[in-house]
Image 1 (cartoon, rainbow, N blue to C red):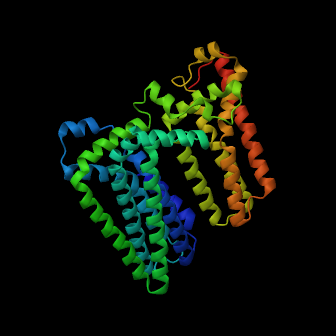
Image 2: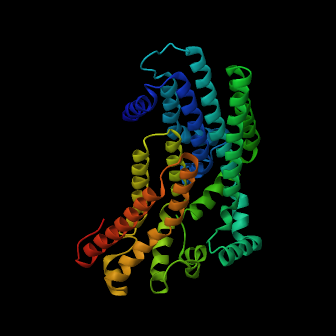
Image 3: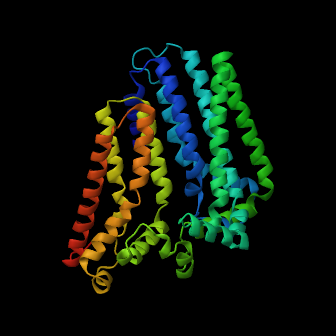
Length: 396
Protein backbone atom coordinates (compact mmCIF):
# COMPACT_ATOMS: atom_id res chain seq x y z
CA UNK A 1 0.00 0.00 0.00
CA UNK A 2 2.84 2.38 0.85
CA UNK A 3 4.43 1.69 -2.54
CA UNK A 4 1.18 2.69 -4.27
CA UNK A 5 0.96 5.93 -2.29
CA UNK A 6 4.60 6.87 -2.89
CA UNK A 7 4.38 6.04 -6.59
CA UNK A 8 1.20 8.09 -6.94
CA UNK A 9 2.76 11.08 -5.22
CA UNK A 10 5.91 10.80 -7.34
CA UNK A 11 3.94 10.60 -10.58
CA UNK A 12 1.66 13.52 -9.73
CA UNK A 13 4.55 15.73 -8.59
CA UNK A 14 6.44 14.84 -11.74
CA UNK A 15 3.77 15.37 -14.41
CA UNK A 16 0.52 16.23 -12.63
CA UNK A 17 0.48 19.78 -13.98
CA UNK A 18 2.06 18.99 -17.36
CA UNK A 19 0.39 19.25 -20.74
CA UNK A 20 -0.37 16.13 -22.75
CA UNK A 21 2.55 16.81 -25.08
CA UNK A 22 4.94 17.19 -22.15
CA UNK A 23 3.67 13.94 -20.64
CA UNK A 24 4.34 12.04 -23.85
CA UNK A 25 7.86 13.46 -24.20
CA UNK A 26 8.66 12.76 -20.55
CA UNK A 27 7.38 9.20 -20.84
CA UNK A 28 9.42 8.48 -23.96
CA UNK A 29 12.62 9.50 -22.25
CA UNK A 30 11.58 7.56 -19.18
CA UNK A 31 11.33 4.49 -21.42
CA UNK A 32 14.95 5.02 -22.43
CA UNK A 33 15.88 5.08 -18.73
CA UNK A 34 13.88 1.90 -18.08
CA UNK A 35 15.57 0.18 -21.01
CA UNK A 36 18.98 1.04 -19.59
CA UNK A 37 18.05 -0.14 -16.11
CA UNK A 38 16.61 -3.43 -17.38
CA UNK A 39 19.71 -3.96 -19.50
CA UNK A 40 22.05 -4.29 -16.54
CA UNK A 41 19.97 -4.64 -13.35
CA UNK A 42 18.09 -7.81 -14.33
CA UNK A 43 20.77 -10.30 -13.17
CA UNK A 44 20.98 -8.51 -9.81
CA UNK A 45 17.27 -9.06 -9.28
CA UNK A 46 17.38 -12.69 -10.37
CA UNK A 47 20.68 -14.02 -9.00
CA UNK A 48 21.85 -15.49 -6.77
CA UNK A 49 18.49 -17.01 -5.96
CA UNK A 50 18.21 -17.87 -2.27
CA UNK A 51 15.45 -20.38 -3.07
CA UNK A 52 17.54 -22.37 -5.55
CA UNK A 53 18.03 -25.33 -3.10
CA UNK A 54 14.24 -25.56 -2.69
CA UNK A 55 13.73 -25.27 -6.45
CA UNK A 56 16.17 -28.08 -7.02
CA UNK A 57 14.68 -30.17 -4.23
CA UNK A 58 11.20 -29.68 -5.65
CA UNK A 59 12.50 -30.50 -9.15
CA UNK A 60 10.36 -27.79 -10.76
CA UNK A 61 9.41 -28.28 -14.39
CA UNK A 62 9.79 -25.74 -17.18
CA UNK A 63 6.40 -24.13 -16.69
CA UNK A 64 6.71 -23.89 -12.92
CA UNK A 65 10.25 -22.53 -13.10
CA UNK A 66 9.27 -20.00 -15.76
CA UNK A 67 6.34 -18.84 -13.64
CA UNK A 68 8.64 -18.53 -10.64
CA UNK A 69 11.23 -16.44 -12.51
CA UNK A 70 8.78 -13.97 -14.04
CA UNK A 71 6.69 -13.75 -10.87
CA UNK A 72 9.86 -12.81 -8.99
CA UNK A 73 10.61 -10.06 -11.49
CA UNK A 74 6.98 -8.93 -11.41
CA UNK A 75 7.32 -8.08 -7.73
CA UNK A 76 9.94 -5.49 -8.71
CA UNK A 77 8.29 -4.28 -11.91
CA UNK A 78 4.68 -3.60 -10.95
CA UNK A 79 5.41 -0.12 -9.46
CA UNK A 80 6.92 0.84 -12.82
CA UNK A 81 3.74 -0.12 -14.67
CA UNK A 82 1.74 1.88 -12.14
CA UNK A 83 4.04 4.91 -12.45
CA UNK A 84 3.68 4.87 -16.24
CA UNK A 85 -0.09 4.92 -15.82
CA UNK A 86 0.13 7.84 -13.37
CA UNK A 87 2.39 9.80 -15.73
CA UNK A 88 -0.17 9.49 -18.53
CA UNK A 89 -3.48 9.49 -16.71
CA UNK A 90 -2.68 11.55 -13.63
CA UNK A 91 -3.85 14.77 -15.28
CA UNK A 92 -4.89 17.12 -12.50
CA UNK A 93 -6.52 19.63 -14.87
CA UNK A 94 -8.20 17.75 -17.71
CA UNK A 95 -8.33 13.98 -17.34
CA UNK A 96 -10.41 13.41 -20.49
CA UNK A 97 -8.22 15.54 -22.75
CA UNK A 98 -6.82 13.18 -25.42
CA UNK A 99 -7.94 10.14 -23.41
CA UNK A 100 -7.83 7.83 -26.44
CA UNK A 101 -4.24 8.94 -27.20
CA UNK A 102 -3.29 8.43 -23.56
CA UNK A 103 -4.65 4.88 -23.53
CA UNK A 104 -2.85 3.95 -26.77
CA UNK A 105 0.40 5.40 -25.42
CA UNK A 106 -0.12 3.58 -22.11
CA UNK A 107 -0.50 0.23 -23.88
CA UNK A 108 2.53 1.04 -26.03
CA UNK A 109 4.68 1.85 -23.00
CA UNK A 110 3.59 -1.25 -21.11
CA UNK A 111 4.33 -3.38 -24.16
CA UNK A 112 7.82 -1.90 -24.56
CA UNK A 113 8.74 -2.30 -20.89
CA UNK A 114 7.37 -5.86 -20.80
CA UNK A 115 9.34 -6.76 -23.93
CA UNK A 116 12.62 -5.38 -22.60
CA UNK A 117 12.21 -7.15 -19.26
CA UNK A 118 11.37 -10.48 -20.92
CA UNK A 119 14.23 -10.28 -23.44
CA UNK A 120 16.65 -9.24 -20.70
CA UNK A 121 15.53 -12.12 -18.47
CA UNK A 122 15.91 -14.69 -21.22
CA UNK A 123 19.35 -13.48 -22.27
CA UNK A 124 20.76 -13.33 -18.74
CA UNK A 125 19.33 -16.68 -17.65
CA UNK A 126 20.86 -18.22 -20.79
CA UNK A 127 24.24 -16.56 -20.20
CA UNK A 128 25.47 -18.89 -17.46
CA UNK A 129 27.21 -21.56 -19.58
CA UNK A 130 28.99 -19.04 -21.83
CA UNK A 131 29.98 -16.90 -18.81
CA UNK A 132 31.49 -19.93 -17.12
CA UNK A 133 33.40 -20.76 -20.30
CA UNK A 134 34.96 -17.30 -20.55
CA UNK A 135 35.81 -17.32 -16.85
CA UNK A 136 37.59 -20.67 -16.89
CA UNK A 137 38.98 -21.00 -20.43
CA UNK A 138 42.45 -20.05 -21.60
CA UNK A 139 40.95 -17.36 -23.86
CA UNK A 140 39.38 -15.71 -20.85
CA UNK A 141 42.64 -15.73 -18.91
CA UNK A 142 44.48 -14.12 -21.83
CA UNK A 143 41.85 -11.37 -22.09
CA UNK A 144 42.05 -10.72 -18.36
CA UNK A 145 45.82 -10.45 -18.46
CA UNK A 146 45.81 -8.20 -21.52
CA UNK A 147 43.23 -5.80 -20.12
CA UNK A 148 45.05 -5.65 -16.78
CA UNK A 149 48.42 -5.00 -18.44
CA UNK A 150 47.39 -2.44 -21.06
CA UNK A 151 44.28 -0.75 -19.62
CA UNK A 152 45.05 -1.23 -15.92
CA UNK A 153 41.52 -2.49 -15.37
CA UNK A 154 40.60 -5.71 -13.50
CA UNK A 155 38.24 -7.24 -16.05
CA UNK A 156 36.61 -10.53 -15.15
CA UNK A 157 36.26 -12.39 -18.50
CA UNK A 158 33.18 -14.11 -17.11
CA UNK A 159 31.42 -10.76 -17.37
CA UNK A 160 31.90 -10.56 -21.16
CA UNK A 161 28.54 -12.24 -22.01
CA UNK A 162 26.80 -9.90 -19.53
CA UNK A 163 28.41 -6.87 -21.15
CA UNK A 164 27.30 -8.10 -24.57
CA UNK A 165 23.78 -8.68 -23.27
CA UNK A 166 23.68 -5.17 -21.83
CA UNK A 167 24.65 -3.65 -25.19
CA UNK A 168 22.21 -5.81 -27.16
CA UNK A 169 19.28 -5.02 -24.86
CA UNK A 170 20.10 -1.31 -24.94
CA UNK A 171 20.29 -1.31 -28.74
CA UNK A 172 17.12 -3.36 -29.23
CA UNK A 173 15.10 -1.35 -26.71
CA UNK A 174 16.36 2.10 -27.74
CA UNK A 175 16.17 1.31 -31.45
CA UNK A 176 12.59 0.11 -31.10
CA UNK A 177 11.59 3.25 -29.20
CA UNK A 178 13.08 5.50 -31.88
CA UNK A 179 11.49 3.55 -34.73
CA UNK A 180 8.10 3.32 -32.99
CA UNK A 181 8.02 7.05 -32.19
CA UNK A 182 8.93 7.85 -35.80
CA UNK A 183 6.16 5.56 -37.08
CA UNK A 184 3.66 7.03 -34.64
CA UNK A 185 4.47 10.61 -35.61
CA UNK A 186 4.47 9.97 -39.36
CA UNK A 187 1.54 7.55 -39.60
CA UNK A 188 -0.68 7.26 -36.52
CA UNK A 189 -0.22 6.60 -32.76
CA UNK A 190 -1.66 3.15 -33.42
CA UNK A 191 1.41 2.40 -35.57
CA UNK A 192 3.61 3.06 -32.54
CA UNK A 193 1.56 0.56 -30.56
CA UNK A 194 1.91 -2.04 -33.32
CA UNK A 195 5.72 -1.70 -33.30
CA UNK A 196 5.87 -2.29 -29.56
CA UNK A 197 3.43 -5.21 -29.76
CA UNK A 198 5.63 -6.74 -32.46
CA UNK A 199 8.58 -6.57 -30.06
CA UNK A 200 6.41 -8.14 -27.36
CA UNK A 201 5.52 -11.00 -29.72
CA UNK A 202 9.21 -11.53 -30.42
CA UNK A 203 9.89 -11.57 -26.67
CA UNK A 204 7.20 -14.22 -26.21
CA UNK A 205 8.75 -16.29 -29.01
CA UNK A 206 12.17 -16.04 -27.33
CA UNK A 207 10.66 -17.37 -24.09
CA UNK A 208 9.13 -20.33 -25.91
CA UNK A 209 12.43 -21.10 -27.65
CA UNK A 210 14.35 -20.65 -24.42
CA UNK A 211 12.10 -23.02 -22.45
CA UNK A 212 13.83 -26.03 -24.02
CA UNK A 213 17.00 -25.44 -21.97
CA UNK A 214 15.52 -23.26 -19.22
CA UNK A 215 16.16 -25.61 -16.29
CA UNK A 216 19.79 -26.32 -17.18
CA UNK A 217 20.53 -22.67 -17.95
CA UNK A 218 18.90 -21.42 -14.75
CA UNK A 219 21.02 -23.64 -12.51
CA UNK A 220 24.17 -22.81 -14.47
CA UNK A 221 23.52 -19.07 -14.43
CA UNK A 222 22.60 -19.09 -10.74
CA UNK A 223 25.88 -20.84 -9.92
CA UNK A 224 27.92 -18.43 -12.04
CA UNK A 225 26.34 -15.25 -10.70
CA UNK A 226 26.56 -16.55 -7.13
CA UNK A 227 30.28 -16.76 -7.64
CA UNK A 228 30.49 -13.60 -9.75
CA UNK A 229 28.69 -11.48 -7.14
CA UNK A 230 31.01 -12.80 -4.48
CA UNK A 231 28.62 -14.95 -2.47
CA UNK A 232 30.88 -18.00 -2.60
CA UNK A 233 34.15 -16.27 -3.46
CA UNK A 234 37.20 -17.80 -1.82
CA UNK A 235 40.46 -16.10 -0.98
CA UNK A 236 42.38 -17.12 -4.09
CA UNK A 237 39.48 -16.17 -6.36
CA UNK A 238 39.28 -12.69 -4.83
CA UNK A 239 42.99 -12.19 -5.34
CA UNK A 240 42.64 -13.32 -8.93
CA UNK A 241 39.84 -10.86 -9.66
CA UNK A 242 41.85 -7.74 -8.81
CA UNK A 243 45.62 -7.32 -8.55
CA UNK A 244 47.36 -4.78 -6.34
CA UNK A 245 49.54 -3.48 -9.17
CA UNK A 246 46.43 -2.63 -11.19
CA UNK A 247 45.75 0.28 -8.81
CA UNK A 248 48.28 2.46 -10.62
CA UNK A 249 46.54 5.64 -9.45
CA UNK A 250 47.15 4.92 -5.74
CA UNK A 251 50.36 5.92 -3.90
CA UNK A 252 52.60 2.95 -3.12
CA UNK A 253 52.51 3.28 0.67
CA UNK A 254 48.72 2.81 0.86
CA UNK A 255 48.12 0.77 -2.30
CA UNK A 256 47.76 -2.60 -0.59
CA UNK A 257 45.26 -1.16 1.94
CA UNK A 258 43.16 0.50 -0.76
CA UNK A 259 43.22 -2.77 -2.67
CA UNK A 260 41.86 -4.66 0.35
CA UNK A 261 38.95 -2.26 0.75
CA UNK A 262 38.08 -2.22 -2.97
CA UNK A 263 38.06 -6.02 -3.10
CA UNK A 264 35.66 -6.12 -0.16
CA UNK A 265 33.39 -3.50 -1.73
CA UNK A 266 33.37 -5.44 -5.02
CA UNK A 267 32.14 -8.50 -3.15
CA UNK A 268 29.17 -6.61 -1.69
CA UNK A 269 27.88 -4.26 -4.38
CA UNK A 270 28.37 -3.66 -8.15
CA UNK A 271 29.81 -0.18 -7.54
CA UNK A 272 30.67 0.59 -11.16
CA UNK A 273 27.20 -0.23 -12.47
CA UNK A 274 25.51 1.68 -9.68
CA UNK A 275 27.56 4.78 -10.46
CA UNK A 276 26.84 4.40 -14.20
CA UNK A 277 23.13 4.21 -13.46
CA UNK A 278 23.42 7.33 -11.31
CA UNK A 279 25.04 9.25 -14.17
CA UNK A 280 22.24 8.15 -16.46
CA UNK A 281 19.61 9.37 -13.99
CA UNK A 282 21.33 12.76 -13.54
CA UNK A 283 21.53 13.15 -17.31
CA UNK A 284 17.83 12.34 -17.57
CA UNK A 285 17.03 14.96 -14.92
CA UNK A 286 19.11 17.50 -16.86
CA UNK A 287 17.03 16.81 -19.97
CA UNK A 288 13.99 18.10 -18.10
CA UNK A 289 15.75 21.51 -18.09
CA UNK A 290 15.27 22.41 -14.40
CA UNK A 291 16.86 25.46 -12.81
CA UNK A 292 20.71 25.39 -13.19
CA UNK A 293 21.18 25.81 -9.43
CA UNK A 294 18.95 22.79 -8.86
CA UNK A 295 21.11 20.75 -11.24
CA UNK A 296 24.24 21.74 -9.37
CA UNK A 297 22.60 20.56 -6.13
CA UNK A 298 21.72 17.28 -7.85
CA UNK A 299 25.40 16.84 -8.74
CA UNK A 300 26.44 17.64 -5.18
CA UNK A 301 23.99 15.08 -3.77
CA UNK A 302 25.05 12.48 -6.35
CA UNK A 303 28.72 13.07 -5.52
CA UNK A 304 28.07 12.73 -1.78
CA UNK A 305 26.23 9.45 -2.32
CA UNK A 306 29.52 7.99 -3.60
CA UNK A 307 30.72 8.00 0.01
CA UNK A 308 28.28 5.19 0.80
CA UNK A 309 30.81 2.82 -0.77
CA UNK A 310 33.45 4.05 1.66
CA UNK A 311 31.06 3.66 4.58
CA UNK A 312 30.76 -0.04 3.77
CA UNK A 313 34.39 -0.47 4.83
CA UNK A 314 33.56 0.63 8.40
CA UNK A 315 31.51 -2.48 9.00
CA UNK A 316 33.04 -4.90 11.49
CA UNK A 317 32.77 -7.85 9.11
CA UNK A 318 34.82 -5.92 6.54
CA UNK A 319 37.50 -4.28 8.72
CA UNK A 320 37.56 -5.25 12.41
CA UNK A 321 38.78 -2.47 14.72
CA UNK A 322 41.40 -4.58 16.43
CA UNK A 323 42.91 -5.60 13.09
CA UNK A 324 43.17 -2.01 11.85
CA UNK A 325 44.89 -0.91 15.06
CA UNK A 326 47.35 -3.77 14.77
CA UNK A 327 48.21 -3.42 11.07
CA UNK A 328 48.77 0.33 10.56
CA UNK A 329 48.46 3.77 12.23
CA UNK A 330 45.33 5.85 11.92
CA UNK A 331 46.55 8.21 9.19
CA UNK A 332 47.17 5.26 6.84
CA UNK A 333 43.56 4.12 7.10
CA UNK A 334 42.20 7.65 6.71
CA UNK A 335 44.20 8.12 3.50
CA UNK A 336 43.28 4.64 2.26
CA UNK A 337 39.56 5.20 2.62
CA UNK A 338 39.88 8.69 1.19
CA UNK A 339 41.76 7.35 -1.84
CA UNK A 340 39.02 4.83 -2.55
CA UNK A 341 36.86 7.81 -3.48
CA UNK A 342 39.51 9.35 -5.73
CA UNK A 343 38.67 6.73 -8.37
CA UNK A 344 35.27 8.38 -8.94
CA UNK A 345 36.74 11.82 -9.75
CA UNK A 346 37.27 11.12 -13.46
CA UNK A 347 33.72 9.74 -14.02
CA UNK A 348 32.32 12.79 -12.21
CA UNK A 349 34.32 15.16 -14.41
CA UNK A 350 33.31 13.34 -17.60
CA UNK A 351 29.66 13.21 -16.55
CA UNK A 352 29.47 16.90 -15.69
CA UNK A 353 31.24 17.95 -18.89
CA UNK A 354 28.98 15.75 -21.02
CA UNK A 355 25.99 17.46 -19.45
CA UNK A 356 27.65 20.85 -19.94
CA UNK A 357 28.18 20.06 -23.63
CA UNK A 358 24.54 19.00 -24.08
CA UNK A 359 22.69 21.44 -21.85
CA UNK A 360 25.17 24.20 -20.96
CA UNK A 361 25.26 23.38 -17.23
CA UNK A 362 27.02 22.94 -14.83
CA UNK A 363 29.69 25.46 -15.80
CA UNK A 364 33.34 25.11 -14.85
CA UNK A 365 32.91 27.09 -11.62
CA UNK A 366 30.05 24.85 -10.52
CA UNK A 367 32.00 21.75 -11.46
CA UNK A 368 34.89 22.91 -9.31
CA UNK A 369 32.50 23.48 -6.40
CA UNK A 370 31.09 19.96 -6.76
CA UNK A 371 34.55 18.38 -6.84
CA UNK A 372 35.85 20.40 -3.88
CA UNK A 373 32.75 19.49 -1.85
CA UNK A 374 33.21 15.85 -2.82
CA UNK A 375 36.89 15.74 -1.79
CA UNK A 376 36.44 17.60 1.49
CA UNK A 377 33.44 15.51 2.51
CA UNK A 378 35.29 12.32 1.55
CA UNK A 379 38.19 13.21 3.82
CA UNK A 380 35.83 14.17 6.66
CA UNK A 381 33.94 10.87 6.40
CA UNK A 382 37.20 8.90 6.45
CA UNK A 383 38.60 10.87 9.39
CA UNK A 384 35.44 10.70 11.49
CA UNK A 385 35.11 6.97 10.97
CA UNK A 386 38.70 6.26 11.91
CA UNK A 387 38.48 8.53 14.96
CA UNK A 388 35.73 6.28 16.27
CA UNK A 389 37.72 3.17 15.48
CA UNK A 390 40.90 4.28 17.24
CA UNK A 391 39.01 5.67 20.20
CA UNK A 392 37.55 2.22 20.76
CA UNK A 393 33.97 3.14 19.88
CA UNK A 394 31.86 0.68 17.98
CA UNK A 395 31.16 1.14 14.28
CA UNK A 396 28.16 -0.30 12.57
